Structure formats: structure tokens, C-alpha cells
Length: 358
Image (tube, rainbow, N blue to C red):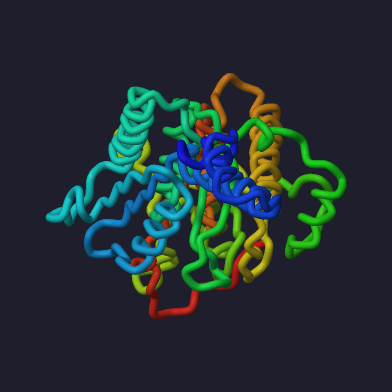
């Protein structure tokens, strides 16, 4: 860059003048030098920090997918931090606490940003390349809300194009901005049962052990045939299985001194049908905002129905893109909303569940 700058400023052209008087030689050298200066600036300018986060335990880590995320980050950013649970805890089988892992990842990201500051750089733009269970992604988003960055983007592996790494969602205040009519129209075309502005909150009949202060938010944004029926069953009964031979796969968080779970007070369903969303970051952001709006409205409506001082809690039954789960965790970091973990190994039943209720 120093040599090219000298050429562009005329030092070297003065030397060339002793060799030739042809104008095109000077023009060609000058233009070439400018191109080299610009190329050097592009190569040297900070391109942000890429953080590859693989939170699957050692027996579930998919090496090829982690490698694809690493390659994408190294190609796009000046610095890459790799946080691989399978490498950090190679002998782990039972698993660390999910919240503890999310906190550990956030601390490592903070430490890397501070290191870049110490090197004399401005605060970098940060992009997360995440590979994790939905619940881990949700908890990571919740933890990252405590450490606001100038720019934080969630990248993901495409469902449509194998090994392509794409932008999922930008985490920022725009996610809290009300959707405009065009966004709502685009989103409505994706819903399995287009409705007015909000889905209907369905009250669950009173039953023994019912936890009236709790509502279930059931969100299906990807292919999963029985997901809505299974989640509705868990919300209406408090039971994670239809019987000894058919488990829904859901694992409810432990509640109360006896760790008992009862039916929720109500539920609402946001369903795009049994299909994947297209790889469109604008659509991902609109879906995230819409789900957040539905949760806020449902929580306020249910609190008014209860008419007491009990805080309304939510159970989020979610199946969809990982960036949306991370963004929802980030948006609801101060809310009493818990994403219910789903284990595919538990969900392998041998009988057909009964027909779902209304």
C-alpha cells in the first residue's frame, strides 16, 4: 500500500519521466496504482468478528456442518472465534447446565471483543454462526440481550441449499417495530390459517392441578406434522405422553416443590403449515416480530382475564429456524417465557395418538 500510494502521488511517475515521454504509460501506471491502493484498503479494513458456536454435545456434533460455518466465517471476517462444545467438553455425556453454557459462550464473546479493543480496533460488527438445539439457541439469545453490541447478526445453514450459510436475523430495535401492511400481507400468505391481526387465545377448561397463570405459545414454522397437536395435548393436560407407548418428546420444566406440572390456563397457535420458510432474512425478521407481538398481546389479555396480581408465564412450544429462536430469546429476555425442549429420541412412539381437540 505504501509503494502504491507513492506511485499515485507522483513520486515514482517522476522517475518514469526520465525513461519515457508517452502519456499512456503514465495514465496506465497511475490507474493501476489507484487500483492497488483500493485493493490494499479492502484487504486491511476491519471486517468484523465471526463467532462459530456449536452447542451440540459430543455425541451429536455434526463435523461437516461445523466446518461449513467455520469456512464461511473465516471468508467473511477479519477474526473468527470458534466455540465448539464437543471440543471444550470432549468427555461430556450428561451435559452442562443449559443456562451455564449460554453464559459461558457470552463471556467468551465479550472477552474476544475486549481483545480486539486492546489491539486498537474499533468495536467490531459481530456475526454469530450458530448450530444448536432450539432451546440452547433461545437461551443464548436471552443471555446476549445483556451485552448489547453495535451490530449483531445471526447466520445459519440454509435448509434449501446444502452447506450455504446465509443471514438469518439482525438483532436490533427494528424487531420491536410494528409491522407495516406490506409485511403483514407477506406474512399472512405464509400462515396455514390466515386470521386477523392476532391468533385467538383458547381457554383450557378447569382441571385438577391447573396452572391458570400459565399460557402456551405454540409456534410451527417448519415441517413437523404432529407438532401442533402434540403441543396442544401437553398444554391442555400437563402430560408429555399420550400413554406408555407414545411420548410427545417434550420435556416440561420442573415446577413447584413436588416438580409437578398441570394444564395451562390457555394456549394460542401460530402455524405456517407443514413446510419450511424460505431463506429470506426479511421474512425471518417479520415472523420474529409477529410472534413477539402475539406473545405480548396474549400475556396482557390473559392477565386481564385473571384479574389478580399473579404474573403470567409462558411456555413456548417452538419448531422453526434457529435464528428466529435466538431472536425470540433476545426479544423476551425480560419476560417469563420458557422454550420447552423437544427430544426426538423420546418422540419415537409405537402407537397413533388420539385425534386432537379443538
